[in-house]
Image 1: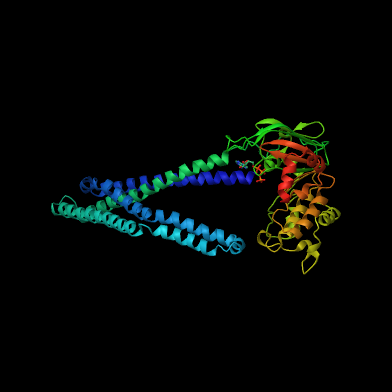
Image 2: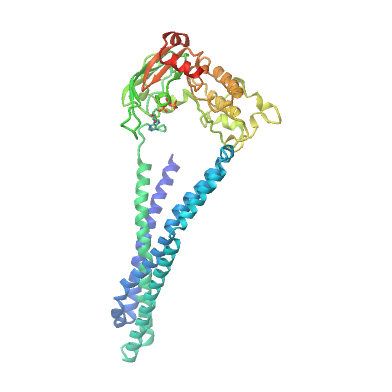
Length: 467
Ligand SMILES: Nc1ncnc2c1ncn2[C@@H]1O[C@H](COP(=O)(O)OP(=O)(O)OP(=O)(O)O)[C@@H](O)[C@H]1O
């Protein structure tokens, strides 16, 4: 934490220094040049003083035309490059969808856009550059004329006029170059202001803050939503949960079903306390402790999560599993073996794999989708959480892999409270309780048999799924 704070502080100081540096450079060029000029020949300096603002403007013009000419091209080339990066990152999807040609033409169209008006822009830039250079030559010519006049009239000697001339000339050029930098520094300051604001923003739910209770005796698997109303901060006009209420006993398996956009994943997010509801409460344990009063880190360690796309790091399976633990935390070999068994990681010991030392490759690319998911299950299990959240954990898998992973998920959920969102209704039929979430409310709740018998929304979803 301390090193991070120091790093941010150093960054701020550097940014500030750059801005101060630009202004200091402008001022010092001007002052030093003028002092030298006036010391050597005040008459020459006085006459040439008027040329300084013209030189500043000419230098600024030179920089601006060069930058302006490439600005538009940069935006379009950035977009073109983004297509290349996305295509390489998602090479398999690109090939599977046969969209290579489409992507190439998108790339070409961005590159072509960067060329629109290129000639005009560059000709204008060249002319601007030429004009500003011409101005310098005129000033130099004028300076030489005045210098020769002053020498001829015995007002000053050659050394004096030349020193004064060079002093004025470099004062103007230096100030012009620095003036452009001042503009950039101001822009950077504005950009940094936004970034600093983001850095300074104190998160409403800060997982690093050591605040809140860490109850020792809490039946964490007991979860209740009491008339929860919730909208996402960036879309306050859409009330996603409009009064969601349910109560789950510890150890129950819960299936969350309902139409797309009904708020199932939102319920999961609120259980993980990524957000707090604007109205109503999420309560945990037998004593119905409000979730927003407990320590977030502690709570999140009570909750295992397996999502649709497992994120694995480019290291061994063991390291990927151990990411589920705190830095100073260790687990017994026995517990690790048990998690491995429950997650069905037997494949790690077959076909040339090196058990837990098997390297998974970048983003887990050396494992199949089902294998990655089983590693993710093991990672969630290693902390032995009393609550398991499974958000469409098998939706990206083929039928065969789905069956294997589903078995692992069921084993992993045993003895814990589990919430499962599944796109295939068959996978949640065996749950103790099924919550049917529609239009931001729990409209039905019961076992599969009960809900089928009541012939409501769940029944209709089942009929639709069978068609
Ligand atoms: N981060 C977010 N910011 C704003 N709105 C969001 C955000 N996440 C989800 N929503 C909106 O909240 C509503 C509920 O989304 P949610 O993902 O909870 O539904 P869901 O039932 O899980 O849907 P699906 O079955 O399609 O995954 C949707 O209208 C969605 O557009």
